[in-house]
Image (cartoon, rainbow, N blue to C red; front, side):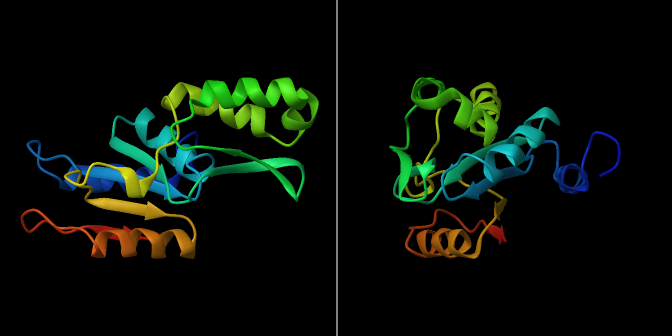
Length: 159
């Protein structure tokens, strides 16, 4: 890191400068549940004024629970504020100590709710899609291969 801005953000700013003023780059960040990595990247890029959205590829949003066998499971589209209130009501101390409360407080300031990649509008296009796990990368590629593409615009997917 250099100062408060990471090299990650510097890369996006460089890419955005390469785009013309008429067509700024559109970015997507994708993790499994649209909670942690995709949201941190979304937050940083948004603060730099970049055009970004974030997604998850799982079937549901899964967060650590009181034990490994008892995760907290939510549907995509459940507002971050509702998830935050639910976890505070269940065990504020546990979810504060493991970082979930802080993560959700950040997420509430970025967007309303987690979104599922496979459910997004098929006409949506992103110039660069960043994934943070191999299985997420595979899910994004599989979804893109099954789409009817409009025009001849490429998608760059980087894991």
